[in-house]
Amino acid sequence: RTSFRGDIMKTTKQNIKKTNTMRLVERVFKKPIEELLKQWYLDEKKSIAEISEISEVSTCTIQKWLVLFEVPRRHLTFM
Image (cartoon, rainbow, N blue to C red; front, side):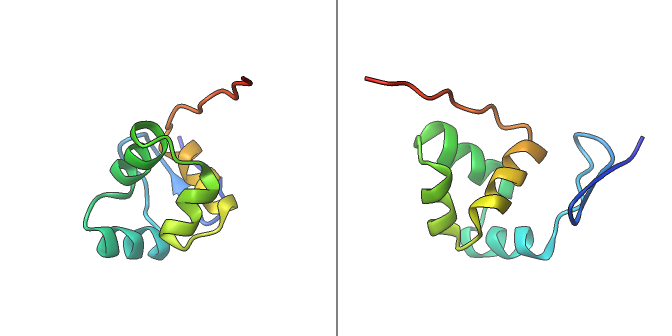
């Protein structure tokens, strides 16, 4: 089963066709993009805007990648 989302084709969870931008970020940071997203978003608790600034990729693209790689979203908390 194949579905299209923007310029990324997703066929299965394990078989994601990476874009040139994903490969560029991987080369710069020397880690797989999925691992980077999980590290920044889940472990380091960085916001999408912060990840966007670090990686020099738009916030919309970061949001799409989080969905694509099924990174669990954090819930907003108010203090």
